[in-house]
Image (cartoon, rainbow, N blue to C red; front, top):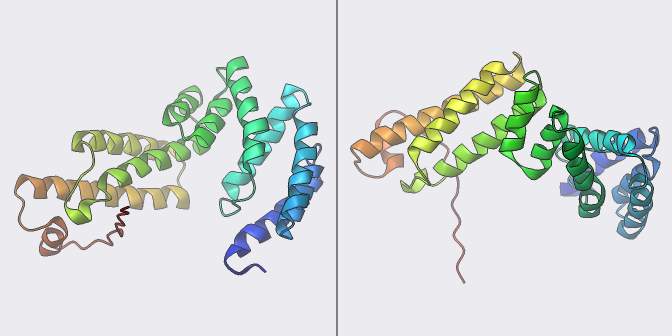
Length: 236
């Protein structure tokens, strides 16, 4: 039954067991169990029961549930059925909006808002409020890195998206936040990726000043070979 979706199902099974032991999360655990078994109709029924209960709770209890759900999602990104659209729209998003409104100086509220909305400014607010929030800083680094990757993902065709000066500023921001992360494997892996991004941009700027041939060929001639992404174009 699992085949390609094995990690998702196994993750749901583990999370179901955790949820069943927590206040107000039993029906969410039931949802995860039904999803693990492929019983979509029963899963959605359990989810509706969970939402009816959770949305009726006081703010502090809803805040705790939302924090648990998002922390769990962050630890298990492979579990893609963990936060279905009704859960996001009816519980998580409204609670976060209320959280930010009621407690605008709470960095955790901005961290989770930035996470679900992919909002770099919210993540910047989170680390400004609490410069020890390594999770918010890590999320911000990943967000900015994705922007750098997007700007450079057509370099295989000798095309750069946007302005190199903007991407240089983004790399400077990444460098700043990397220095603020605790030492460890997570930081080391990000630093490797950061150095690769900076090197690629530096070589592109050098190539652009005196282009000869296409950029991938120029890189090879200058002693650097990259694993270029595949570019797929869709036409009508």
